[in-house]
Length: 489
Image (cartoon, rainbow, N blue to C red):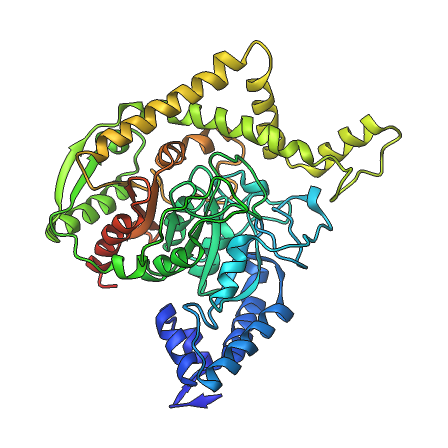
């Protein structure tokens, strides 16, 4: 296709914003069907090296794109995501498509329904390209735990893309989708966004329905978007957010126009900088990039205030007790009886349970099930799980007090830049400790955005985390957009 001297290929090779693509589709300068086909060509070229997509939904995607083209040709109103090619992390279910959660134990499972987030994306006109690789059951910080192989970071293919939503971040960074959905339990959107140099959003707990999400830790799991820029991420969140009768934990609060809110000036906003996130263990180049982002906010008229969040030092043990305890309960359903993988080496029912779970789950998932089962066991519940929940409450209260004095809090998203594949896989504790900057917001239930704020001398991306109070995503987007604008984006 060539119209107005612009080809479909040029729209893809030179990435456009979501609004630019939608405008071109609405005007007829670009066909959604041809844009979709071009993205599938990119996936075919890049996926063998990066291992981003686990399965493709071509028939469904092209049918949706054809509907968008037909509506555009008739001049019908188009949804905010009309014709936009997106990818979905493979812990969200789509009718007729495999749902593996990156695990062998869900081998052969094709869910009979769509997740609420999937339904809302398609209702807005989005074209869903396929299901994206992730750490098994969203458990990991490197995307090396998938039963279907690790994802490589498009910026530096010898390095990890982060996890557990590493595939979703890599898809955006490699332009194998305009935007994607991921999930965040303890940093699984924000850390990959930082490692891949894209924008990732942690909504307030309950802001987005979890209906159709394969659960890891139900009181922590959240669905959120990845995009190449803040405004696109804000647009996606506006589409998927809102109350859902299928999820009793979803919030009935009205959904603002996040994209418009993100453009508001930040002059006069009070920005808290917690000392605990800038101490020992912070890579010097990460520190320099984040401090440069803070300087940009100061230059934009923000008031920078030092603050303290002392309970932060207890966040890692508290998170890894709460999350693993909930994982132990949630993953009990995968037993070879109802659906998914069943071990053939089973003479008795108890043998079948044991062999199925041993063969179906990977090492990291088994490690977390064991940790969680131990924490919930008689004699240890009060000493471990209950105490972790008490720390969680203290942490939440600490954030509430902080947000009485500041409008947003900024920190590094990760204390380190993306590390090499295999570098930390033999040391689970080192991997867990790297989550220190993200698990606090997860435990407190607040919202946040990771936005690129610079790079190391070798070109590895660095992200700044912008945290805001419950249901204050608009504020987080405003601050993130100011950081983005300071870099000429």
